[in-house]
Image (cartoon, rainbow, N blue to C red; front, side, top):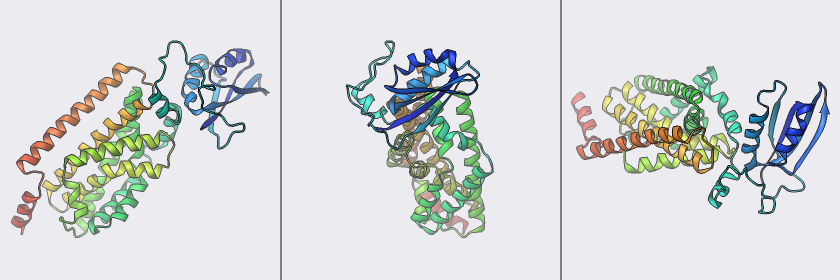
Length: 350
């Protein structure tokens, strides 16, 4: 069973309060005196109890200047921390008893603080972020231009938009407006850079607009919605369990980076209709990823600060998705989802 090692530092006169909290969350803890009239308590916590332990610690000791809590992953524990009905610790009386499905999907999920820590660095548009977004778009664009799927996948592994995308879904789930604004700003900067990199490629490199890898990024079909929803759900599921960021990046980038770069390439090549289609695909994918991401976070038991706020944000995303699906149906019915009008444009331009 996955477990965490939690080290807690606080004044020695508050140790008794701490021991009462630890007794509700773990069966193994010990203490030692450290310099500065402080006590250090160390405990082994089953991963699914980490969330509520940190919440109780924050509520009880957050106002203490000398309080700190460190959480680290354990590779092995002896004796094994078992996950059985016998070892299950009781919940607070004011919390509803989790169902079997909630226990199954939340038992290996990282705590909210660990999720914050995993995406914190990627939410700041520093030089490394700007460079990786540009390089990822260039690699994806050249791969699509030459029809090399493996090269496009290589660009996805770089995963520059992973942090902001996960940050948007996480912020909407827990109702963190500051995190949401930061993630949205960073994502917007990355999107603009990806499109600009595609424009440069479209201007400087000969482009065959009918290459399948490029053309497919301008066609919006019902299957694309299913793909984007699956990418968002699978990405959040892997991310919330500490999976490889490269794996999560492929799941998310397949729905975001290629259509952005394709939009820039078609703009640079002078085919604005195809560029608009690629941007439409990106918009559909972004909304789908957030809808599926929020749903998966909630499904795993991530605790919202306000259910009313989270439900409202989720409703907005769902309404946007319905509107985009209606537009997609209209485009297909009117023929804008096909390439006939693009072929007419290319013929006329010659």
